[in-house]
Length: 338
Image (cartoon, rainbow, N blue to C red; front, side):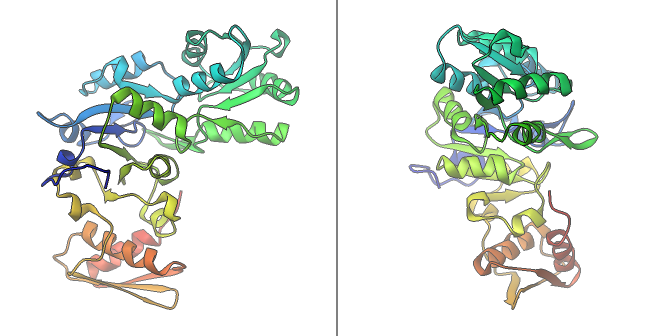
């Protein structure tokens, strides 16, 4: 638990700021995640700050999208990896330097705001490359970036998410485009977004949070970033990461709390921790996890207890359930991984 956090009957009451991921947590593409607005827009709740690895839109555009979906948000309350990437650039290269932008005009604008000169061609002698998600990224701009990076340009990636949740499902993310440049150049970028520290540090600093809770849908970015920054986290199973991912998650990728949806903010904090439960038997026999629970036990309770046993044992290769609810959870833990 975050130092100094008070006892609370509801999870939302334990924290002063919610640092919310967007894609897969608050919305998927153009559509809000079902129930997200009702869970977040409550009287007297913690302040909401939106922290996104997606560098394709400006903070003002993101806030506008959130407003249309019914979420309260101002430009100030949106913290993007493009802003953190621009800050990293400004710390490493002289003011006025040319920066080759692989990404949207919104990313280029953030580069301008820190006193640097965004360009789109290697012929403009860039001393740095910044790369963020854009649905229009193609071979030509990647080729320009390849030339610059191979010539020694400093390289910053807004994020390295391999996939991006959309209303149609998971599509390739900025990390997949970064991987192409890594292959072409033999270099690796500095990373601004989660799980790297710059974006999370910027969000905490801007919000003035004393007891922040990080909420997201990816264990390898949102949760890993929270753990690296020493912050509590809630993983919601509305986006990328699955129970099967959690089964084999490294300690650095394990959340403080787990829930299917943001409605869990109304529940008691201790009920959301991944821990043994008196109504669930989760026993390890060799490399097999056996789960048993009554038909009246909620699947979420069974899932948390099963994960607690798996994490304690390590090396689980198979999951079996006795009874309908336990079998359903075992199937989810054995299912596809991201």
